[in-house]
Image (cartoon, one colour):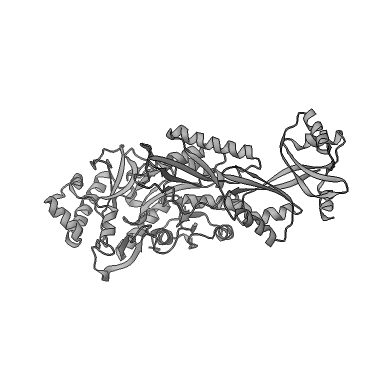
Length: 146
Length: 443
């Protein structure tokens, strides 16, 4: 049920983001979604790709520090209150969201979110029990292709 | 050199015999050689003769080893001022090799060797390798840069004279270093400690586990490093990491080396006479006191150095070494007097910053200290490369690491520093040597 996310350390300097993305582009790797966290000094680029092992290998070969994290992708109804329903479940269980971002694609009236939890397994159980559809990687890659 | 008597399995290498000379005989040999080298320098080197004459002393003034304190010092600037050949004591017809420093500003410094100088150099390098337990049958990968830099050729001819198999790979191209280390089964590696860290970090990316390789010893030098760094290297690579000391002005690598005790570096003092002086007053200090290391080449022909100020801060250890060598040891050098910087009136050495960084779990010692100023106010920025061990995908964890590192430094030097995390491999390296301090202050 968990999705593998790659994260990379970036200095806040012109050209550094492009350099990373060019490495992936040259290896013919498509970025399904990404999020960039920035501080005054540095940034952390997180991204989801289909073949994360290959992406990690080409990045590391280029000397990039890559970290693999397991994140949770869930469906969310794309209407007012859709996200709140998920947050209610997470809050009620006292689970902390480290960070989150969204996928760019939609499937019918549903959007897809990515959550980074401390304990993804416990979060998945809570979400599933609460009736939220947690998406596994196979389904995610199928959706992304549509 | 290759036909040295050799008895397989014998821990004592015959070329190392002078390491074990009884002290009275060693001192006698030193005095004999000192008088000869002073005479040689006086006869052939104008600058030295002029300084002796100014002091009103002649080579005959050297009657005992203690008389060395009456001789003038030589400093690095003397080599620049007499560029290129002004300090040579041999005619060019006898000089068979030149080396030169890379020289960050202006002209490089040039050093010269006669055939006999090269023989001595190979001999002391054999004694270094032997002290590390290396012998015929070992495969030594030499990753010091070949060329004008003394490191590459110095280690090369020493390893050949030892009878070991040399892989003359030179510096750089880390992936190929790792491939050949594995494929050729290198048992020892010569390079700077910071470059070996790079190799350790890179190996897993190539699917190589350094700990599983036949590599058993590293002969690391050409830059100061700390005991913390040694511990890191030894546990990460499962090897013994030995410190080698040398400088081009004296001969190159091979002035001194650790033995298996790894407690100070034995100076091959039958060729290089060590003194410790107070770097401020230049007065000789008694054994055991910390000060600047001053070396005199006792047997050098092409370019004798009398009382050369190394700028390296250490102390002479005279207690007998359990390894049995009688030659004295210097405490391992972790700082140089010219590396020291003064920030807001406080003296700081890069080694203090290194220790503070390494006190934080998982941090690799790839760092640089950048000094800037805004008017009268000095600022210190410490840049630390992010490694896979410390990298996290959350901003909170990375900011936490930054705070932890700057607090650790502040505890040691009592000055607040700006800690900047930087990308791996972003700190420039030259000759595989890490440049620790970048002083960009405007005066």
